[in-house]
Image (cartoon, rainbow, N blue to C red; front, top):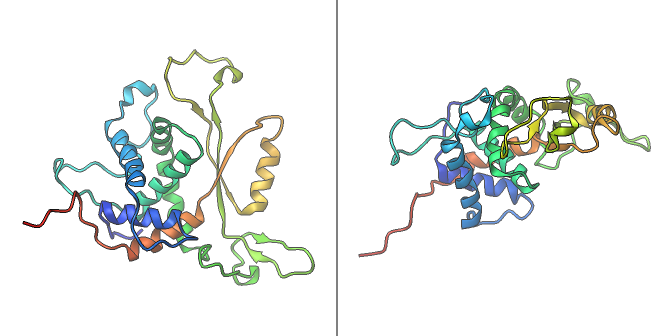
Length: 240
């Protein structure tokens, strides 16, 4: 992956553009959007791992803590911004912030393996259709009516979140206030594999799963970070 890093304001700007792709607003993110990001980052920094029982494999969810003190500008990689984008997706569908940080610490390592390939796939954000024959390494998206098959560049992430842990096999009771259980995440390349996996999971084993398409947001984040302006931190100074 690229060694290029970005400032917090650039990451906020790129995230806002990625989430408002259809509208393409010219101004930056509103305060409430930046506050959502700040709360996730603060919670990640202050998370008490001991309260979680089993420690996640990663010691952080979004960006590696800086050793330079509170006034130091923390550098963000494109992958860090991608993790924040997925966290905002989860926030949007109703996950609690604590759950998101806990889950993203588990997902960070497998997502890091996927990220470069997601960015390099045929673009999902330029609205161009890519023929299957020009991308033989990707799954085929069959279309009816004799239309030429397309390359399916989408990658889906399936999350199994279980709040009612009593429905699982007998286990020691979890402490009050402990996070929900998340089963092993599943990555599916293309909608055909997603359908096959859902057919396996549903309806007998699971009736509810959460599915995120992760290629488009990875590409959008990478594209908009390259165009992100330098945004000064803090409140603007009043003229003397």
